Length: 377
Figure 1 (cartoon, rainbow, N blue to C red):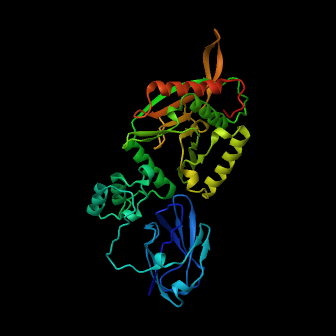
Figure 2: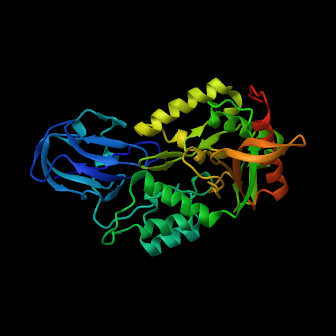
Figure 3: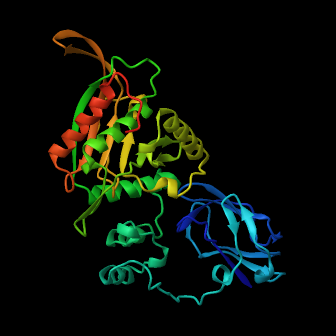
């Protein structure tokens, strides 16, 4: 009997959720026949059979999460596992190898000594019976934290309550990221408005907001920063990599528009269009979901004025734009009705002073209120 383990789907993904089995126990299957569809944090993936054989046992039920290299299917093989050519799926090539398909003695647990985890965290993992090999660290440089271990333990054998449904895929990832932010960040929020009466009706608001972030980062770089609080260190970025909060049917995703400082308005719009297509198709790469130095949420297209957006570490700031509306203002000593864009800037007060945040927000408003701005800086 052979064991087919969940292949490494690439890009650092540590597990997947069973969406639908295309086979059942007792079925005869052939090489490259689709066995199961799984959902990762970013995509749906069809996994093909690596061999000809008969299915003895399915390794998990629909809705269950299974870690990379855990048993997916037990086979009665009719051809050698190691003699087959690689299979391909939408996730890329799934290679046959001893590492992926080998048997492991029941109850045997190994630990990769190259994992980034302190002795304290390793001891916690042993006490909670959590396999560090199956955890993607959220600490600096991929370090596994005690919160990562506790979270992994809390999801073991978790079953939905009556009337509830389990958080899955992107929505579950969103939940985990927000929890981590709540536990890690000391947030404070500034709110103000920009007078955008001069904007044409069809102004590309998201592009203007990104340009404003680029400009503000050049005026007050303290908010275009990564923070390593445990090491009491920060990294000030010259590049501006803007994470753009994106609402999808599956939950919130934050793809990253890299090197926004190098792009003009047309270039920004072109990149945003590509990102939108990849997010909706769930084909965006892991690299394009990481590396934000500052984050933007343009929730105003849905409604609402001000907010307290959530900072996503290691970044220290997020700007949120609400729905523009008309306000009675005094402009150049003349009272009139002007179109105003509400802005909310949340920052991590461990790394950013109130004065720095105020200067940054003032620079955003200055750029937005300029009659003409061609960018980049």
